Length: 234
Ligand SMILES: Cc1cc2nc3c(=O)[nH]c(=O)nc-3n(C[C@H](O)[C@H](O)[C@H](O)COP(=O)(O)O)c2cc1C
Image (cartoon, rainbow, N blue to C red; front, side):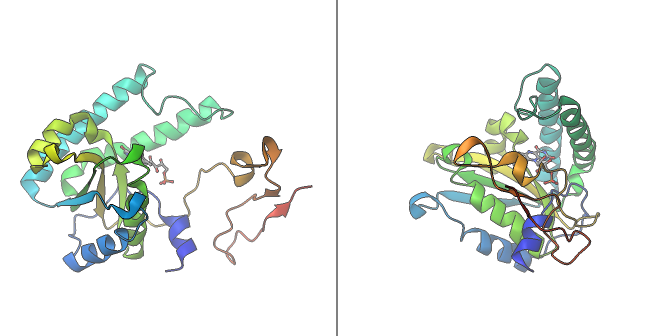
């Protein structure tokens, strides 16, 4: 798969078939992911795959509780997703949140069907900086395999229980960074839409100065319907 196709179409997939992901596919995904950059190449990461139905059932209950907690924070005006980015219309933000919640509800309601949960642990993930390249590589490699998923953090609300259920050696410093739900998507892959264009989120030499190029439409696929290229701005 062309790398741009992977970059443009690795959307979060919450509606998954229950079919298992073969072990050799899982191996290819993780073997690609461990090539990711990491500070000092210390590789203080651990990937814990969960496919045991009884464990998945435990995590399903925890996930639903954790999600309810997050949305409680959201409704009381706290939590990370409350505020739109500066300059973004609050109504548009609210609509985005409404859509994410709808598809998140599906994931929560069908959590037991997700064939593979991949917990990612790190020692000192530097606020995520030291582990997110590997997590994104997992999702990109999964995309190349036709496997989709979502990165979630909500189970960190119940970190102690997660550690207990999984037997994590916390005394060594391991902390849960994220949990990915992975499986074969029910929906179709498409370009990750609903993104503010490059010129709105970039500048050059000074915060208020234009980046210099406008990108009215996604530049991939190059010869698809979206043929308009970048426009130089004077
Ligand atoms: C740090 C982080 C945490 C996220 N947590 C969740 C989550 O708990 N549940 C969920 O459904 N999606 C989660 N997402 C996925 C985002 O909601 C998703 O990337 C965003 O809505 C854009 O959707 P798209 O990538 O499909 O275009 C998370 C993404 C990141 C980077």
